[in-house]
Amino acid sequence: MCGITGWFSPEEIKQEDEANLQKMMHVIAHRGPDGQGSIITEHAALGHVRLAIIDLQNGRQPISLNKQYQIVFNGEIYNYKELRSNLMQKGHQFYSQSDTEVILALYVYYGMEAFSLLRGMFAIAIWDAAKQCALLVRDTIGIKPLFYNHLSNGELIFGSEAKAILVKQGQAQLNENALHLLMNFRYLPGQFSLFKNIQQLAPGSILQWFPHKQPKIHHFQFKQPEPAPIFDVFKSSCQLHLTADVEVGAYLSGGIDSASIAALAIHNSAQPLRTFTLNIGDDPDEAKNAQRTAQILGINNIQGDIEYNLDKQLPNLVWHLELPKINALQTFCVSQLAAQHVKVVLSGLGGDELFLGYNAHKIIYHMDCLNTLMPNILSRSLSGILQRSLSSSPLPMWSEPERAILMLGALGDWPRVYGLLRNVWDNPKLRQQIYGSRMLDADLDDAFKVIRQHWPKQNDPVKAMAGFEWQNKMVNDLLWQEDRCSMAVGLEVRVPFLDPVLANAIQPLSRQILMPKGIPKAYMRSMLRTVLPQEILHRPKSGFQVDASHFFNQYLKHMADEWLSPEKIREVQLFNPDFVQRVRNYPTGKSVRWHYFMLYLMLMTHLWIDVFEQGNRP
Image 1 (tube, helix red, strand yellow):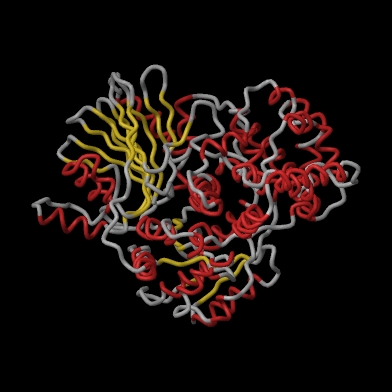
Image 2 (cartoon, rainbow, N blue to C red):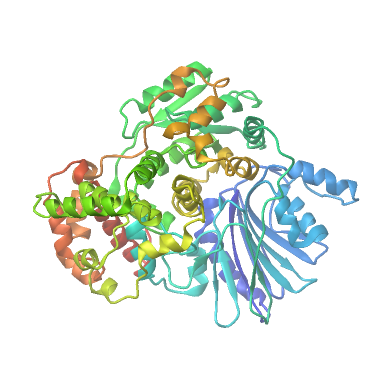
């Protein structure tokens, strides 16, 4: 695990450009505290910062082959030993035990077909002098990030984080449309970044660059092995994700996702498994449940508390995340806790997405049942009556009852129902209330149209929702946050549920199989009954969130007084000071959760402006 950066140029790159490359590497050095390496050829400048996990002595990058091919790579390939053995049978000689050398050898033998053989997480940059082309490659799930900017002079700049590109590109500029989508989704759908002209490479994509031609985008899929029982695939994934030359630990919550991974890991680990839990969340018993799980499994559980110092923590979070995010502080703090003890942890991220475990899945299921019972004309009429009765209500704007009524009126229009459920609010009236002149003057996408554009062609709305979130929320919310918060402290997080073999085996299963009678994770619980006891399997689901309004007023009031003052809001011109004051006058409670999420995003956006546009790095 590490960070990569550099650029490809149609003109010859001079050795004096090494200074620029070193600056780009320096700005992401937190991703690789164990060493750095770089190489400059005629058309390629490649930089690498290393977190040493496999082949500690000889796994340094960049790696070259026959002076014709160079590679830098971020990630882990869990089947690299098998691939290495196959190549050795073909006569290839290896000089290290690293997975990076295997990737490059595969590319030499198989060309772009090589990437479909890789079982793991990866972002790759390759210079191929023989074909005079470069490749940027991202794994099919999108676990590891890869950003790029194709300049008008033909240069292609890339990096594991956008800030590395900024070193060469110059001053950061906010993409107002991306911010608008973030204010709706609380993450960035598609391939956006918050910076103008910098975008992500889509998962499962290869960008092929030539010195004097337009780049080409190719797509690939993981080459699925012979079918096997899903439980066996899950066990295999957990075993492969332990591949390392250092100790591997695990996150542990009170739920079944992390518990199942820990239970399977202890059977394959060469040493006792250490687990890590943060004492925070929307369930006061979460830490107790994690401790009890550890006791049942016979493993060590190390727990920690958050020590709030938000004046320093939030600017630092913005710097690493490169955008405002909600609930990232918890992820950052549990990463800090784990990094004090190990370099690698397993995470249960992805279990809810694969096995339909969210309350949102259950709500869409019940709305689908209602849709079969109630004609559309009746649901729209009832929604209209309820909206009129709500118009004189003292409830705050965009209240949960209002959204529920709108969802009722949209029954059958699943992209809209889904958006309303996930608090997508975009409409002209709310834009006027929320935004300032800089946003109102910008060309902004309709957030609901964005959902429609990406909505899967799937008759079952629950599976369609799961597909949409797999491609968008999973990649650009959960994985984005996990990568940035862990790599900020030099920690590698691995996600066994997001193994491509497991994902490809589960995704064809119907909703009736995965959540019969609308029961979230019913299939998964049945699958794990030989691994976990009933006490763990039937605990109620809890989250990793805090009460938005109480947290804001308890810990962020003084920062809000500064960063969301009417003067600051009018200076930056992104938001409407009347909206901010109106929300801050509401009584605190769960009914204003969305409203305080908006304030939190606004505050962190102003920090983003300070850190990136104005250059005040924390």
